[in-house]
Image 1 (spheres, rainbow, N blue to C red):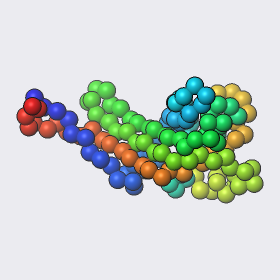
Image 2: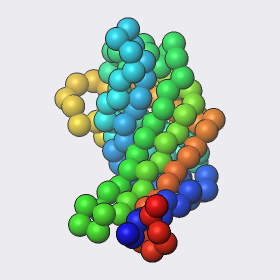
Image 3: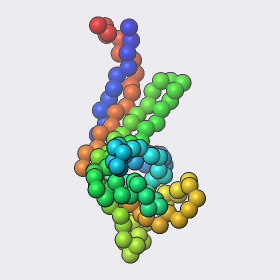
Image 4: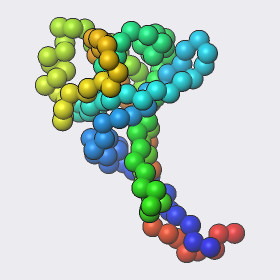
Length: 142
């Protein structure tokens, strides 16, 4: 029976793929446990940038490490990739926002939700992993 091959991606391949997307999931911990929420993001070198209102995700980020996950799935061809970053999140002081904007590779993150998203966040990864679903392998499954 044929099966798909999972290819591990390098750090640079992961960031090249991240630069192609604009929505990812921030994974943080709050008083109820782990949570994952979609956020619009931008890439600045090897950092992830997003904007937020104050709330549970900002409080959770202050107290615990975070993760950030982005994927791209082609359901018709049953292929795709997934990148997972683990690291720390930090609020950016207002005075540092212009410098941050200069570092963003392609476009400023635009939140979907109405409201004042005045908190700029930088996720600095310590671990980056990624996988891509490749072509079929035809060796025996068992």
